[in-house]
Length: 219
Ligand SMILES: [Zn+2]
Image (tube, rainbow, N blue to C red; front, side):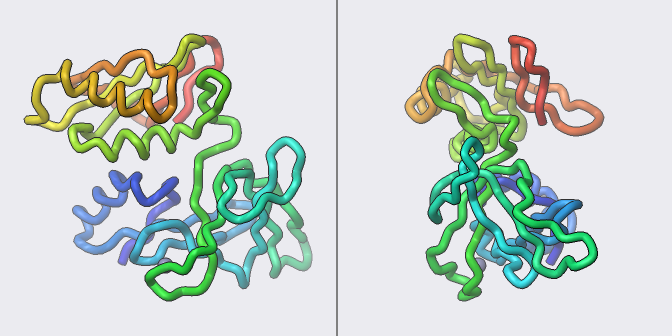
């Protein structure tokens, strides 16, 4: 078994697949932060992070009001570290978004699961609503013709998606329209999907969201 850094959800499997190909074993992601230490780890079902409830007490709060939200509702993670005495960390707002899943996991571990939904500051505003870029990624990778890389270009009128297609996926224009209509049904304001043979990789952190009106780029 290999452990990798956090991924937003079960559907975002591309990095895990890469590690599994290299190491020939299941790649289970771990989630934590420098300030809090370990927060959760995946089980072999890879459907959220079982919370390390002996180490941390996790609440999900409304990012604007700080009100505690019920299980299943997306909000900001608020973490209290239980074992710190000299330097306590109490109700620390991590800046990540997610929700707590209380339904039983097939692995039989009884600890609740945390499902991540990206960073609070990185949400894409489309029309009246905002979305996690990871949520868009999750939807994209459910479409079998989608290849290994994509870019989201956000401007004031909506979203343009540049995407690599899998080899042999058929007529690029037809596939692009299929992807556009699938995403538009879910998010709205998806202006165009542009098929690309290859999207340039940057040398450092991958930049996948580009704001065309001065917010800069995000990973
Ligand atoms: Zn499990």
